[in-house]
Amino acid sequence: MSVNGTLIQLFHICPREMWLHTHGINMEHTSETVYDGKLLHETSYSQRPEKYTEITLSACFNNIPLTGKIDFYDAKQKIIHETKRSDKAEVAHEWQAKFYIWLLLLNDIPDVQAILEYPKLRTSTTVQLTSYDIQHLTNTITTIQHLQQSDKCPDKIKSKICKSCSYYELCYIEE
Amino acid sequence: MKKSYYLFNPGRISRRDNSLKFTPVDDLGTEGAPRYIPVESVDNLYTFGSLDANSALYNFLGKEQISVHFFDHYEHYTGSFMPKDFLLSGKVIIAQTEHYSNSSKRLSIASKFIEGAAFNILKNLRYYNNRDKDTSVQIDTISQMAPQISSAKSIEELMGVEGQIRLTYYQAFDLIINDFEMGTRTKQPPSNEINALISFLNMMCYTLCLDMIHHTQLNPTISFLHQPGYRRYSLALDLSEIFKPILVDRLIFSLLNKRQIQTQDFDHQLNSCLLKENGRKKVVKAWDDKLNETIKHRSLGRNVTYKHLIKLECYKLVKHILNIEEYKPFKAWW
Ligand code: SF4
Image 1 (cartoon, rainbow over the protein chains, first blue to last red):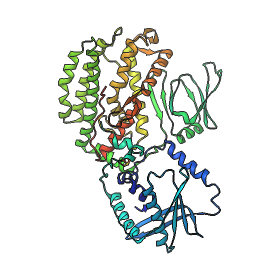
Image 2: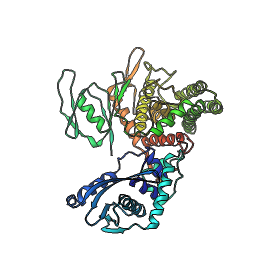
Image 3: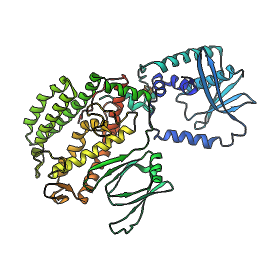
Image 4: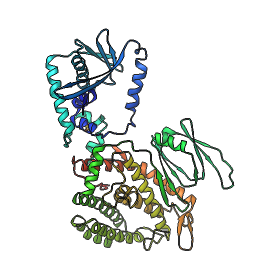
């Protein structure tokens, strides 16, 4: 099993969510959020494709296969653009972006930056990769790999974000 | 919000862009005015009259995740068209199979289903006992039988207890329901109004459970209480045990006692009794309304529909078989 950008992001939101996702326990996509996300993608940056390319990357680190798909990469300026709906999981988005920068680095493309854009909020954040971050990512991918192989589902995080998580009902239904 | 559509008349259904086009056709082959149903609004279809459709339509329904349930002229459920599984998880299937093939794990889940059913049955009996219907004999008998559920050593024994509980429960129907007699439970064909309603609504409950299972990772053919293969989707039978008292039986009591359904809504033959078309429409309407009623859920703190309770039950089962949390059957708290 490989580790990808989605798992990095999910892991930073909630390890349980990542575990459920990785074991194929997905919720129906009936909610508007999916549709909304698609729409955002289609409408906000329709002028983009000429300038940016979509790239798929892979690498192997400590015997752990890594993969990632970057939708908007500006090769000239060395900038990754990521579009997000809300900044609720901003930290998780940042780690995902750092993971992509790292993947590029592992493919001998140094000095890349990422810009996280929140069109709905009209804000953006710039992300860079430090050596400390690389250490964190190294630990993270090891933990993710353990979780992928583990039969034990991590505990609920009992956080405010649970209410808007697609697993809310699965996690919190009791009797 | 998506909803169920019930097609009572015979006719032809086809695809028209992103809508379903239903053209009623009467016995003489005369076409009526077509109806268009936008596909995004369709959860599933129930067909009671004969339906003409081609494979292009079923391909379309399959892609849109719409199931179709069929009933014959005698109100028997005859089968379903189910879209290809769309939420598969190898992990869940393997775990579900494991819980089926390990006899103690299987028995433990099966007994939870009966435990939930018995609790909900007692809830109904107590409700009426508090309202001038003396069901105390049945309450006592069933309460005494309840400990046998957890001590049962085999599925057969468990089924035996279940049968006894149900028999006792049905004896109370004549006490609860005012102007009708049920006598003994007869299925094929039902011999009187109450039996006809039970048979019909039990099938509706079964198909509802089947639909709900289909929206989760559970495999509907692997069951715990009923023998898999007894009916193709036997897990739906397992789940409906828990919900029949709350959804089906309560509805029957109120339909008859409030005289929303009366003798003239049935077609009485020599030894059978079935709903007439008009009666069936009334029952289906009341069923659908019931499913869309909401209650505030205790552990979720949200309003959920009765229908949704079944999907939540599936989530609990998923957690149980993945060893996340032990399964506790649904027990009506209101
Ligand atoms: S509901 Fe909460 S605990 Fe459950 S997966 Fe989502 S974030 Fe994690």
